[in-house]
Amino acid sequence: KDKDYIDLKKKYYSNMVDNKNLNKEIINVSIKYNFDLIHKEKILCNFDNKECDFLTKNNQKILWDGHHYTIEGAKHIGKIIYNQKLIN
Image 1 (cartoon, rainbow, N blue to C red):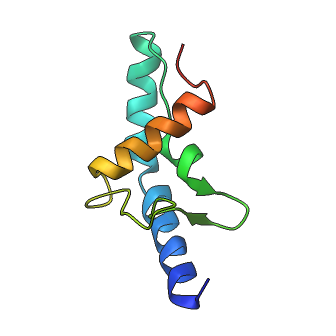
Image 2 (image 1 turned 135 degrees about the horizontal axis):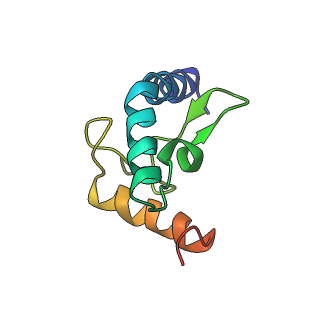
C-alpha cells in the first residue's frame, strides 16, 4: 500500500480516538439503560499501528463524513458484526 493510503488510515485513527469524551457519554448511557454497545473503533481500527480502515475490501468508502456510514460501509460493518458474533 502506498504512503498516502497509510497516512489516511492514521488520520482516521486520530479522528476516531479524538471522540473519547463523546464515547464516554455514550458508554454511560448504555450502562444506565443496560444495552450493549458496539464500538466502531474496535471494529475498524488497529490500535497497535494507530490506523483505522476507511475503505471496504472493494475500495468503497466506509464512512461518508467520518461519523455516518455509507451503504457499502454499513454492509461491511454488518458483516464484521455478524462474523464476530457481536450481537446475539
